Amino acid sequence: MDTPRPHPKAALRSAHLADRRALRGTQRKSTLDQAIVQASLECLEDFGASGTNIAAYNPLPSEPGPADFAARLAPAARAVFLPISLADGVLAWAQAGQDDALGSLGIAEPRGARFTSAVLRSCGMLVVPALAVDRQGMRLGKGAGYYDRALAGLDVPVAAVVFDWEVVEAVPHDAHDQAVDAVITPEGFFRV
Image (tube, rainbow, N blue to C red; front, side):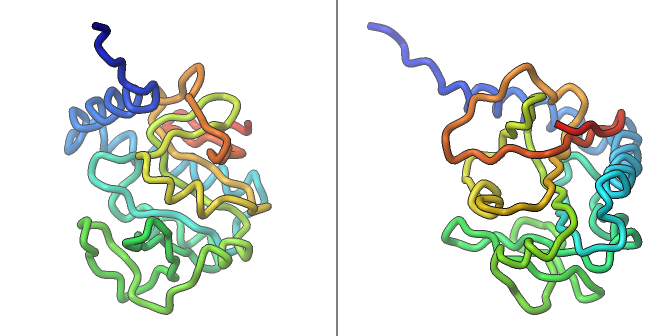
């Protein structure tokens, strides 16, 4: 009897999550996070998104970017919208501000008015997390599809943030997976 092989997405997720756990809390991660902030600001500028509304995220401790990632991008934006994970697999969005507080996952979440993903149409760029991305712009998320649902049908540039070694040859993808327009890493950014 053949042993079932893990789904290619699951195997890739598992490998990248293990690498990220090993990096968590190290000086190396701090250095990489600072470079990600700089590369993100350069990407916003290159896409003409500086001074516009943007969407960003505050990463978990193992994810690329410093804990205050959105606040570090805020001076380059008119407003920054942050995601709020809802129970039904949908993202709500609220403007980052002074009243952000830790949410259920230990990530800073805004407390202001909530919007549907339609608010993303007001943005000049969306800066989103990923576990891996390929040079065709296919991103691998954590598997719940929150971002794929939020990005569907938008005509707004999207940049995925990953560590350099998470840019891979090919990301397994399905018809509903949404491609990105740029990739941001500690080494810089590139358009897809």
